[in-house]
Amino acid sequence: MSLVLFGPPGAGKGTQSSLMLESSSMVHVSTGQMVRDAIQNKTPLGIEAQSYVDAGKLVPDSVVIGLIRELLDKNKTVNFIFDGFPRTLPQAEALEQQIIDVTAQPIHKALFLEVPQQMLLERLTGRRVCKNCAATYHVQSTPTKVEAVCDKCGGEVYQRKDDAPEAIETRLEAYEKSTAPLKEFYQKKGLFVSVDGVGNSKDVFERLRPYLK
Ligand code: AMP
Image (tube, rainbow, N blue to C red; front, top):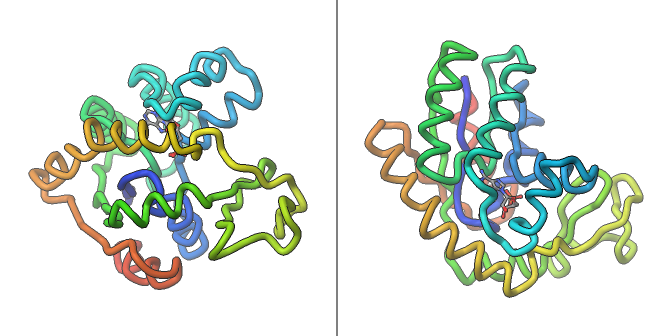
């Protein structure tokens, strides 16, 4: 059973994916993390993607679709959580085809995390991430115990470049233009589920839990 978790930037996709993984044996697929790893490792793909990511723009479909194809071919499983993928209609169409090719099973549900815009801005501007283990914090609601040091692994905690105000604006625009139309795409297929993404992460997770079965 594979699930798509989607929503605007700051909706909590990464946090909820982590909680979902604690309660299931699914494989987490985060294109954002894959792209950040490629940038950190200075691979050709990372070098190509960096300027898009830093500016808050979407990386070209061909790059992301290629990454997913490689990953699906390597992982012999049928249980994936797609976090931040698809983000455009061509990506959704490619995923539909690839997932059948590789796992012989269609996407089970597309879970949309619904969060008001003002809250997205608060979450994104205060977000801090561990460079080492990708644990996420918020300067007000969930700060690290020691400033800029990850509670979990001691790694350096920093603000992503694309969480700067100018990049956030671009990301929200890209979401409205390219990703929001996926709601209708999945509605037409009878896969769309809207989940209230407001509240603490454990409460939001309880709303998602029924779809893990
Ligand atoms: P995220 O961590 O999911 O917020 O993704 C961070 C950044 O990676 C995005 O702002 C895009 O630049 C890039 N990215 C991640 N996933 C995709 C995708 N499916 N399509 C295009 N760009 C993506």
